[in-house]
Amino acid sequence: MLVRATFQEPGTEGEAPPARTTVSFLAGHSLLEVAQSKGLPINAPCGGRGLCGKCLVRVLAGHAPPTSDDKAVLTDGMLRDGLRLACKLRPRTPVTVEIQSRFDLRAAPRLTRLGEGELPGEVDLAADLGSTSVQLRVLDARTGAATGETSMLNRQVRRGHDVMTRLTYALHGEEAREDLTQDARTTLKMLVESARGRLFAKDARIRGLYIAANSAMTALFWGADIKGLAEAPYAPPFTDEQVGAAEDLGLPGETVTTFPLLGSFVGGDTAAAILSTGLDLDSPDRPPRMLIDIGTNTEIVLAHKGVLHACSTPAGPAFEGGNISIGMRAEEGAIIRIEVRADQSIRAFTIGSVRPKGVCGTGLFEVLNELVKSGLVARDGTIASDEGRVTLARGVDLLQLDIRELQLAKGALRTATKILCRIAGIKDRGLGEIDVAGAFGSHLNHEVAVHLKMLPEVDPSIIRAVGNAALDGAAIFARNPKGTRARLADIRARVSHVELATRDDFQELFVESLGF
Image (tube, rainbow, N blue to C red; front, side, top):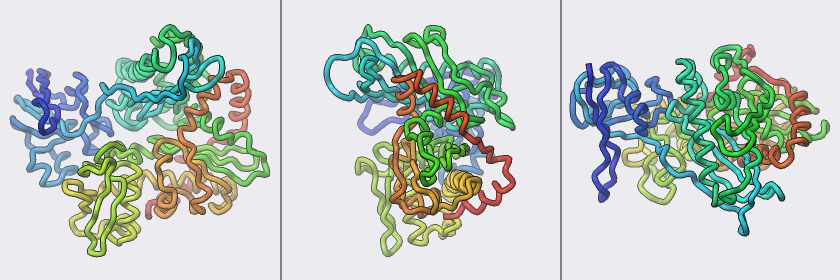
C-alpha cells in the first residue's frame, strides 16, 4: 500500500513560504527513512534508534498518534504540540509534517585563505576525515607553506553521528557500506573542488592527498570490510598505510594516502596527532605527557619513559551537542554560558547575543558547572527540582536525560585517563603536561573541565589546547613523506595499545567517574 507524506522545511518569519516536498512510499517505512532517501535534512544522531530524541517532526495534518517510543523520550507538552520522532513514525494514511531538527548537507564549505600572492600551480593536500566534520589544508608543493583551509560537515552524518551507529548501518549490506564510502569520498571531493581557483590554481597539479582518520573512517573510505570493527574484539581490516590512485577513488589528483592504524579504534588520526605534538620525540626522562583528542571517538595517548600508552573511548556525540535534547552546533543562538542569580533565576548568554535556541557542547559544560556550584544540580548529576528539568531560557529546558548523557561521555573519557595513568604507575599530579586536541578541546574551559572531573585532577595551567592536531600531522606527512614514514614506523613500534573494555577495573572506575 502506498502512503503519501509531505515534508515542510522550517521557515522564518518574514521569509518566503517554506519549501514542501511530497513523497509516496510503501507503508511500513519510517518518515526518517523516507526523508533520508530523498536527501531531506532531518537530524538523527543515533541513526534512527529512537534514543536521542533529535529527529523531531511536527504533525500538521493527518493521523499520527504518539508511539511508546515518543512517550518515553518526549514530554507531555511536546506530544500535545504534535511533535513525534520521525524514526518511529510509520504512517498508513497521508500526513503532513514540519521538520524541526535539521542539518544542511547542501551548505557550501567554509574556506579560509592564508596569505596573499599568486596561487600555486603544484600542491599537496592534507585532510582530517573526522566523524562530524572534514577539514582540508592546501600546501604549496614547492615551499610547503599552507595557502588555506576549507571544511564542511561529513556527509556520513545522515546515517548517524557516532562511529558505532554508522558501522551498524554499514552491516546492513554491500549497498549500505558503499553508501558510507561514497559519502566520505564525495565530502573530500567537494572540499578539493571548493579550493580550486581559490587556494590553488585551477589547472594546478595535485600531487598527493594525505588523510588522517580514525579506524572506522579509514576503513569506510577504502570500502573495506568493517565487520571486525563492529563486534568484539574490534579488529580493523588492515593496519598498514594505504595508498591508491586518486582517479580510481573518484578524487582529483594523483595519489591518496591514509595513515597506518595503531589498534582497533586508535586510528591514523591519533598517529597524526602524535606526529604534530611531537609526543614520539619526548626523551625518556621527560615528565609524563598526555594527549587527549576529544571528539565523537576520543583517543588518549600517555607518553612515559619512551612508551606510548594509547586507547580510545566512544564518548559519542554528546561533546558536540549530539544526543542532547537541546544540543546544537556552536552557531548563532547557542548558549555558551549562564549566570545563576541569588534567587536562582538564570540568565543565558549566546553566540551572537540573540534569543537562545539550544546549547553547544562546550557551553553545556559551562552551564553544568554553574548549575552544580549553585546547587540546582547535585554532584551525582541529579536535578534538584522535582520537575526533572532546568529552564535555561524560554523554550530551552535541560533535562535529566541530557545530564546523564553527558555523564556517560565524560565518565568514559575520565575512566580512560585513569587507566592509562594506572598502567604507567603514575598519579594525575605526576603529569607534566596535557595536550587537548580537536575543535571541542580548542574551546573547552580547562578549569571547568577539571572541576567537573572530565579531565585529570591537575593544575589547569599545564593543560594546553593544540587545535586540530590530526590535520597538522597530515600536513607533516604531505610535506615530507619519506621522513614521516620513518617516524610512523617508530611510533607503531612504541605504541602499547590498551583495550579498555577487556580490563577488570573498567566498570569500577567508570562508575566512580560519573559524578561531577
